[in-house]
Image (cartoon, rainbow, N blue to C red; front, side, top):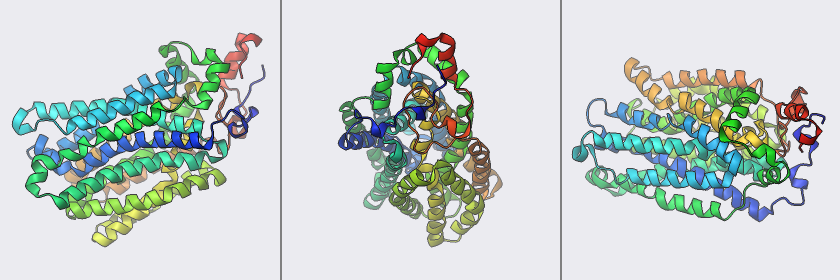
Length: 472
């Protein structure tokens, strides 16, 4: 068998068995709402840091303790990726996504009923951290699976457009959590918020997750995975250990490239979205409500523009979008962070500028990363690389920023940290293969022939096994 690339196959939009536009829209909605549930939790957690500190970490190191609670949820994300990813490539995307969204929503809701430190002593922060670990383990399968599911349902020439709605869910979930806490702050007294008001946003995660579970249960698995399962069952079957080993050995190059890109992506993500409210309050001196308003305005602006950037990437390609974002953030992080320190109005301007510069990365995640791997290892490759990088660099960004700014008093450190991450991202981006418009079907690496006509690991394995093993 001659080594095949994915482009040798007819693209999914020309396949008469492809889903109808109505089914595609349902798949996009089901994927996005799961991501919204995940990020609703992060938004609520970031917006209630003051109340969580009082409830679970009283004392001089309280804020750092809450940031540790935020970071610890990322410790289990790589393990979740190693477990959920191969399962998703073995049994399908749909089943894993149904379980992960349920675990995320239930563990988030349980935070709303935890006893405080005054009631349970040291067990209160232990229970909080334990639930954050469950969330992290579940998220290790949720995000990679949702992005893969959405990418495999999307038409090849519109993957950027449709994929951007997964990140619309990210922003919608985070903004909803921030807005809800802000409304409660305005409607309740400080005593009411400290005693019971902070619990309400966490409890609302359960119905949100149940809606997502229902939507996902109404869909079939992605057409790309279903086609491979029917036509090439050997590539789907096998033990989870075998699939994990195959992913790590045969596809270590895209795993490393994606790792570097995610360093830049998620240092920006967690610095701008998760750490920013606390930074604006403690470092710049804005009130808690004004800090939330700054972030909320920026998030709404990003939500309005993200579909535009996603659609744009279908015409220009993914790499040009990432180059603009990384270079822009590297050049303007220091000036914009300095500007945010000049007052409330300037903080809005600085945050919105950085948020818009970040969008070309955020809008193209679902179009870029799943296309780096063939179908039979796509879930695992994405989940492992993304979650390992996020755990080491992204999720720890608020903790690192808080610790360094607190120890040195250098208010511009988050900008420098972000610039360093952008450099890592640019090095990785130089090795990325452009895949805009490429089909995701089959066992070939999408877009391989565009930049590198070298052998494909799966094609080589098929050739060694003889003609009978050849698969499309």
